[in-house]
Length: 351
Ligand code: KG4
Ligand code: ZN
Image (tube, rainbow, N blue to C red):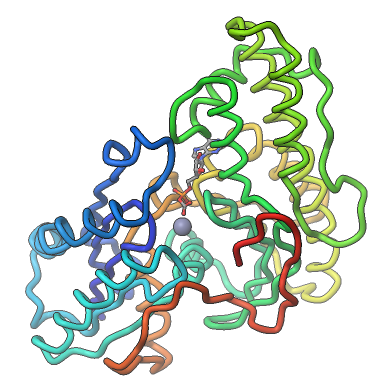
């Protein structure tokens, strides 16, 4: 079975061809980093226009690299949401047009399901497993029980983890996206020189919060002589990264307890999303997993961040179960994986 996947929900235009034997025949990603850099964040209209400009060429490149034609495909999958709606519309229209012209089934994939199922593409693990999804837009702990079957154990009540990294980077004068730079500076810093809170640590439940920590960093920056010295930047980054890692590890430990109690057959703790690139966080999660009896797994970095191979793979998993969509599918700006989960409340909550 051969599926074309298209991803356009954020600031990466991506296309990939994946086979049901878990072979990635092609996987092309075009980052819009340079288009958004002058604004210090993603501008939705610029993103939508850039997707429109590049998506046909990327699909063409993915098909050429895979050495297949539209006629060889079994179905066409795209991200149907959640995400920046202008971009999602571009991907959905493109996928529908190809499906219609080539007379192939159309699959609208939940972007979060793409992230959630990636570990089955890369490591072939069975359901159920525990997933931490930490990206620029999301921070959730999910029990992944099957295709289309998710229980949300925790979510952020304000900012996403990646968003906090990006905002802290801005505060200390580092560029966008902030995560990789904060990590690089943290490596040169002393995490113990400045005291920062460990948000939610020890609190009941598995929810996250990062806005208080972000504010604490802002106050800390304001209390230092301007401009910040290089040592101050490094030490602030180190203190912040350690606080995030400790907070996320604490929340994850609680989720592991809940998960292993309810689904004792589950053996894996999986991480996905751009923040999964953070080595301090990975180290903390690996420890938390081992202590709770779960094996820690992280897909390779290029499959943790936004890509189309994960969308094509989710398409494979859904198509195998006969879960196809009609051409009347409407792009969705919001699309929770667990519709039964209560809405998170707090300042800045987006989903
Ligand atoms: O999954 P992703 O590529 O895009 C979405 O948000 O969907 O995640 C991007 C986020 C950004 O906020 C970026 O700053 C963060 O992941 N990130 C990191 C690191 N690399 C990327 N955060 C912390 N440490 C890193 N090494
Ligand atoms: Zn994503």
